[in-house]
Length: 271
Ligand code: 13P
Ligand code: ZN
Image (cartoon, rainbow, N blue to C red):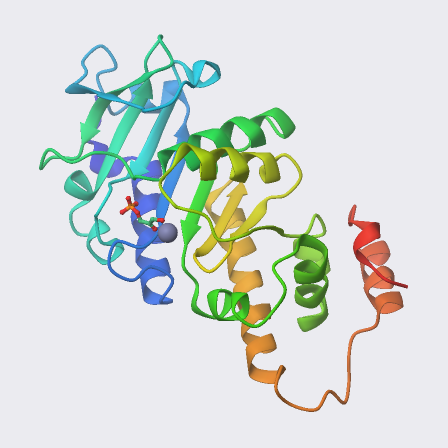
């Protein structure tokens, strides 16, 4: 068996957490990531016949039974993930009963997976139903996206439309738009269910006055989605209070989407 330190999935996770921290998206323990790992890949680095301990999931996820995930720990600081992955991360496998997680590696200090596991696992389930290649669910608290939540209506169409107009490439990067949830209590199965419901239609879901969720096939795709929303939100926050002289029109958005051949949400344009 090869040392887990050499596993590409671990490197990917360490680099992503460090980058997200560097960008100010993950203060203190803010944010969490889960990455679905192929069984064959996990078996190169871990003894899959040995579980360190069992941790109840707190919800029922029979569709995910047997699946293996690398998940950030609850209360753990993103700034520390790269230097001490074994304490700040864990590899868990959903038990055959769909109710427990078997810890295969990590959470060395007796810790456990993120408190947002319901939203992660329910979102994985929702995205896998749409796209069998989905592997990543990422949550964070990007500054400008969060700031925009306080001054802009929290509604799917209005929020998406504003973001699309902030940078020319937004409609190409996230033609499926952004789903928006109102403020809800975090860490609960209820917010997990609401997030997963939006994830059936969107790869991006804003949690009102809290942060954002992204989903994708790779860490880069998911990171890039959130990064593009955050950039657009930054432009919005830099300009919302200034007189508007120029704008990207709806016909121009349509022209872009059609030129790049993306399947955009047509009902989110006004003209
Ligand atoms: P965890 O530390 O449990 O991952 O929670 C952080 C967070 O962002 C809650 O929404
Ligand atoms: Zn959060």
